[in-house]
Image 1: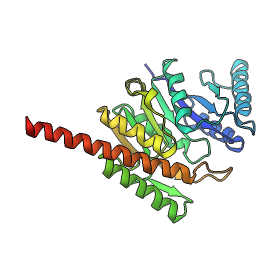
Image 2: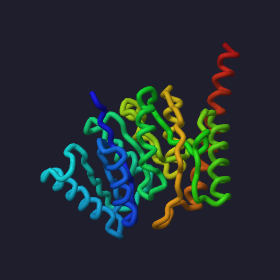
Image 3: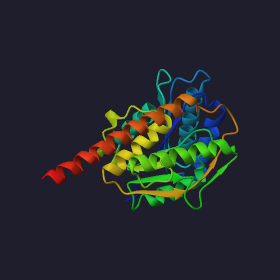
Image 4: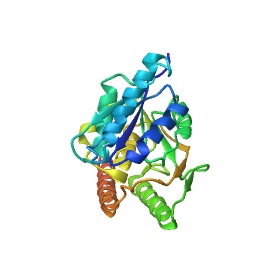
Length: 260
């Protein structure tokens, strides 16, 4: 039996990018459904996605497009952040029986042509990370300081949290639904880089099979990046706090074993 795949695409002010992203997904993973989670974009991104979904349904009804692929839109009333958008998308997917749930940006930085390899890897993994920093991975059109920030942030998270991952901050990934059901999504309140690290760390701690597949990350050419200093600071503070807590927990466990 074929698996049902849902690609969750969070949007805020992505009017220029959402249609090309949906077109690319239709071309490269035509069997996958898409859920656009729009945070009340003032530029009308959510309505544009609704129009796209309606046009797709109409074309399928007329026989002008293959039936079976669906685009859905989840409208949220305000900008609440990347983490809550994805959690909302995960809950939507789990409530409708999808087998694999994908995280993917709308801005073109995550290439739809890389997605079939991520999906294939879910045959033997619970979480598949699209990785820029494993052999075969690449980044296009990034200045040197962005590369340093990303590599440094991932190295810091890997060392402090003890997770064997080269790209825990990346946002192009595929989860098996069984893993999402096992994770305490209600406890996840982090954003941006921090959200991605949080979810990867939770997966590792839960004993999930996590693999990294090389991808090519392409810097957006349209619209404005959502990356900010606040997101970076949040990630640094959170990873440091989690790392200190993890080290304390391990030390306490070692002390108890020694005392016993």
